[in-house]
Figure 1 (cartoon, rainbow, N blue to C red):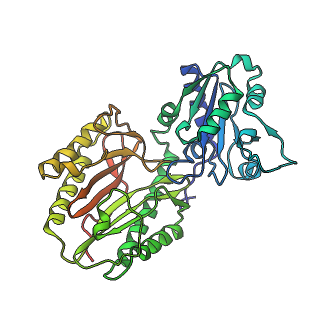
Figure 2 (cartoon, rainbow, N blue to C red; figure 1 turned 90 degrees about the horizontal axis):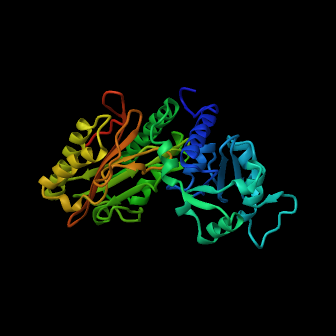
Figure 3 (cartoon, one colour; figure 1 turned 90 degrees about the vertical axis):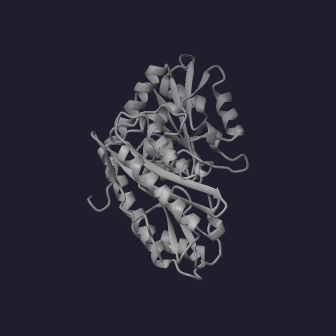
Length: 391
C-alpha cells in the first residue's frame, strides 16, 4: 500500500536468520529477548522480531540456533499475539503469570520446559543470551535464571540492537511515512499556538493530528513547553498559558507501524529575549553544518563534534547536554548513539536524527531536531520543517 506502508511478512524470517547467525558467532545456544509496553523503548525487541505491539503483559521472543522463534507471553495475551504478531508458536510463560490469578484453561510452561522442547536437551544449553535485561524487574530476572540454573547468562542487548541499525527498504518507506505524520503534528501545533492558549491544548491538537494521520502512539510523550518550562531537557505539558515574548518548544515523536520520527523546533511568539535569538541562530547553524558534513564511512562523533564546536564558539557549549546525533527506529533514541565517546561508524541506510540541544540556560531552552537517511553517497533530509517559525 502506497498510502500506508508496512513491513512485509517475509521480512521477519530474514531478521530471524540474522539473529541466529549472530548467536552462532557468539556461541549462544538460546536467546531470550524481553519486551514490555513502555512507550519509550519497551516494545522494541518484540516489534522488530515479531511485529508485535506489546500491550499490558510483557513478552519474550526465544530463539535456538535453528528453527523459528517462539513468543512467550502472559495468559491474557496469547490469542492477541497469534492474531497480531508474525510468530506462530505462541506459549504462555509461567514466569509471567500473576500469583493471585487463575487461568484453568491455559497451558502454562516454564522457560526450562520451553527450552527443552525447542532445543531437545537442556544439558546442551550452556550459554543463553539475554536482550532487554535492563527492562526486567529483579524478580522476573531471578525467576528466569532459576529455571535454567546451570547456564551462563550473557548480555546480548547490544548485539541484537546492532542488527537493526541499518534499515531495509521497507523500514525506510515506513519511516518516511512516520516523518510525514510528525510534520502534520508540527503544523497542527503551530496553527494552535497563540497568546493565552495552554500547553495542554496545543499538545491535544498536535497528537490528534498525528493520530488522524496514522500514528499508533508516540515514542516519547509530545513535548509542548513554553516560557520557563522550556529550560529542562524533558517536559510535560501543563495548563500554563503561552505569553507574548517567549518561545514554545515543540518536540514530536510519533510511532507508526512500530517506527518513529522526531522533529524539534522552537516557535517564536512575538519578540523574544535577544539571548534566545542568538542561541537559536547558533543551534540552526550547528544543525545545518552537521547535516552538510555527514557521510557514510565517518565516525558519527565527527559529525556530532561539528555541532558542539559551533555551539561552543557561540559561548553556549555548557548547554549542549547530550549526544546530538543518534539513530532512530523502533526506539525514538536507539543505538548506535554517536556521542563523543562512541566509535560507531555511519553506514548507508541508517536513519539518523541530528538533534542540537541547548538546555538549562538562564533564559530557558530549545532544540533543533531533524531526521535524515544516509545514502550511498551522502544524506537525505526526511522532513522539511522550517527552522524559523513565528506566531
